[in-house]
Length: 266
Image (cartoon, rainbow, N blue to C red; front, top):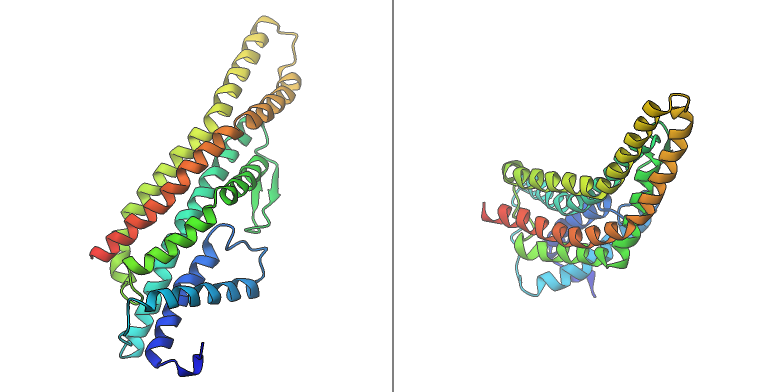
């Protein structure tokens, strides 16, 4: 391909598409992992953008170049906003599962023990990090990263480059993202429900034993018992985690589609 023969319109179209792709690569799970060097993310963003550009240009022979710097800045902001919607929708999925691990951690007694998350560089709970790693492996196994890239490609058909006025359309996307976040919080409770229920019954049984056997030291016996029961129920519920993740991965794509469609209608 002769890049020197590109027109200003073609360069502008490629640059705007690159903003959307690069934003996705910076916030999406796995693709935006902090362990991946910035140079690799930049190179991958440029290659993916080039492939999408060649496919997108097939149905769009000409592209109107923004007439001034304000129009160009608005178009760049809109592309970043569209990429943020797709990437952040997938990121919320992993945040919900990580929240499920933190809920179980509190029930077990690991609430004061945190580890450093290499992906975000922040402190997270032990089981929260465990759920995140397992969810990432499931996400790769079911080709969730392919679904994410497909959603990115489809977004250019729904919202052509430069068509999103982010400062005006953010209000339309907000309620849909809030609804998606609410459902993910419910999913986190569903994943954590087995651990919460079993640990509640364990604590209830220890309370009854303490009433019937006052000489029993509940704190010494109860803490190791909670840890063992919590870890066992966590291992036993991994199958449920796979089922939930498979269902929610499709929900991520449909939610992103609804948000982008809402933006296109306005």
